[in-house]
Image 1 (cartoon, one colour):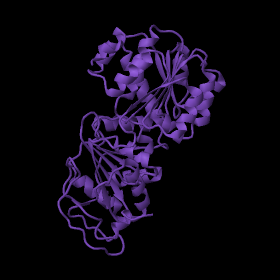
Image 2 (cartoon, one colour):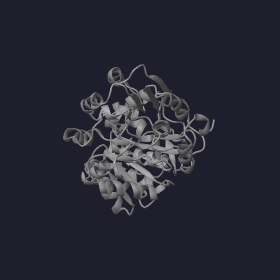
Image 3 (cartoon, one colour):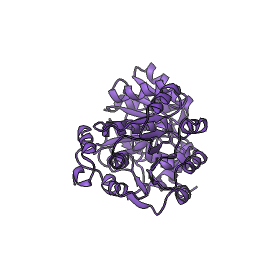
Length: 414
C-alpha cells in the first residue's frame, strides 16, 4: 500500500516524497489510521522500523494551517529531540507549520526566540521543558496531541515524576500517543492515567533480535579486551562501527587508545557538550569518523543509517539494552554484525541476555589472536570454522571458548 492510500494531506505527501520514502512500514500502516482517527494509541516496534513517521505524518495532516502550539512530543534525550524535530521539519517542508526542539545542554536564548515567534509543535526533553513551564515561557493549555516517544527509555532514566507533571498540565480533552520499543509493566501505570481506551499496535516480538543482525560473543581475559578490540577492527571489513562502553570514563579511555592506533574516532556520552555531541554525530554520519565510542545514551538516542558493526566493549547492564545496542546495525534491510567482548565476570549477564532474547548467542574466537587462559583448564573445544548464521564480514572467527579457559561457566546454572 502506498502512502497516498493512507489519507495523508497532499502537502504532507509531498514532504514524504521529497524525503525519499515510497512505501510505509508495518508500524506506519497500522498506526497512521489510528492517529488520523483521533484515538489514543500505545505502539511498540523494534528500533529502526519508522516509528517517528508513524506519528509525525498523521499529526501534521491533522494540524492543518499554522496556529498556536497544539502538539507536544516528549523525548528522553537531546539527540532524539533534535532528530525528531528535524523529521517533523522535513515532512512539513511544504506547509507553514513551525516546529522547535527544546532540550538542555545549550543556552536558552535561541529556544526562547523560536518560542516567541510562535510554534505549532514542540519536541522537548522533560527537564528543559519543566524549566520553561515553571518560568511561564511555555503554556500547555492548547495542546491537543501529546506524544510520548521512547516511553520505556524515559522511565528508565527516572523521568516519571516530570512526565506525570507535564501530562497533568495538558488539557484532559486531548489525543495521547505512546510510542516505545518495548512495553514493560511500568508503562501500564503511566498509561492508566494518561490515555483513554487506547488502541494497541505491536510490530514484531519486543524481545527478539532482528534477523538482519549476525551477533556473536568473543570470550577474552579482562586484560586483553582492548587488544581484542583492536584485532577485530584490523580484521573486519567495516563501513562504520559503534563501540559501546558502560561508563563515560571508559568511553573516553577507549577513544583515546583508538586514536593512538590511528583510527578516526568520535565520542558520545552525557558529559560531552551539546556542540561536541552534534559534531560527533554529524561526523559519524558523514564518514569523517569511522568509529564512534558511546555509552548507552546512544543505544536509543541516535538514528544513523549504514552502521555496519556494533561492538559491545562492555556487556550492558540490562538485557533489553543489548537488544537496543545491536539494533543500531542491520537496519532498513541491510545486514549488520554485532560482537560482544565477554569476560568470565560477565557470565550471569550473558545468561540473562540469552534468556531475554530466547536464543543462544554463538561464541567465536578470532583466528591468530594470542588468547590468554580465562581460568582453570577445561577440555578443548573443537575449533571448526564456523560463523554466525548469515555470515559475517570479518576475518577468521571460529567457534569455541576464549583461549582454553573455563568458559563452561557461561553454560552452567547460577
